[in-house]
View 1 (cartoon, rainbow, N blue to C red):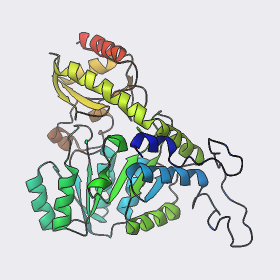
View 2: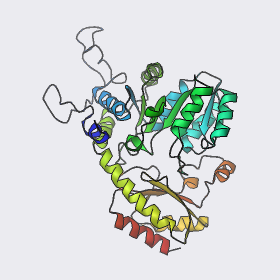
View 3: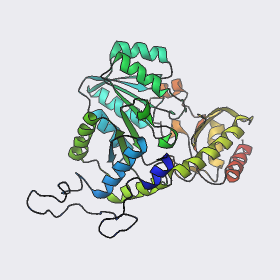
Length: 368
């Protein structure tokens, strides 16, 4: 099936009890067993371990990514943490230098504690990346594409080729939050694990905090599944239901996000008050750089349709200044080196009418 059909139909079998087209939400903590040690269908005993609503969401993300296994977590960060907890103490991690601030924060925490050796590198410098992988033999290669917030596009297939050639035991992980399965399916190129903040585009309505993992490999899946149950960082059934409902329209929403962002990026590239535009050519995310931090703050403050808020990927347009918000936890020197200063503004372009989005941006630019 095509990806849009998978969005609509995956894990949407009618309720076997009543025939309900929209399956019920199993808002329960525990299940009656057929006898001591005999759970229903051999598995339903306690919702931390397995819940039918969460089970449907996990099947859906696996189908969307074209892999066998999916897992849901209480947040994108708990999904990330689960992957990291599966590494042996002293393991080396290579992480793309332009990554979400929360990812970097937790990696640095584990490094300070002596659990991991972490190195941040430019994954688009493929010659340097190959030399580093060859030398360090990392246990994990972690990257986003497009990156957050500078929207760099990384050649997934090339990174996989480098990793498998020089460090075949490495686990290669892609955070696919920005692109979603609508624009890329990393497993197709040999990626081992795909991670999501499902809070963003997958749920899509700014009303859920949830994380997801998809993989075609049975070995890390069984370890992740153990940690999901043992640590208990699971989403509630209602959050799973809302995310499933969001997935039903993912292909339509991403088309609208993409169309609006293309129009806005084209307009901003030609505007004399904008210094630079960072847009990967697809999707709903873009960043713009102004000539001064004062201009950036004034622009953001004068937007009316765009809400000033953390997060992204909702139906509504959102705007943030990463240096003051999503990436504020990074050391100042690193932010400046990476170009994440107060002149940079990140826009999550919603699905409103393109004309209204443009009008809002034009009015805010007129205030500079």
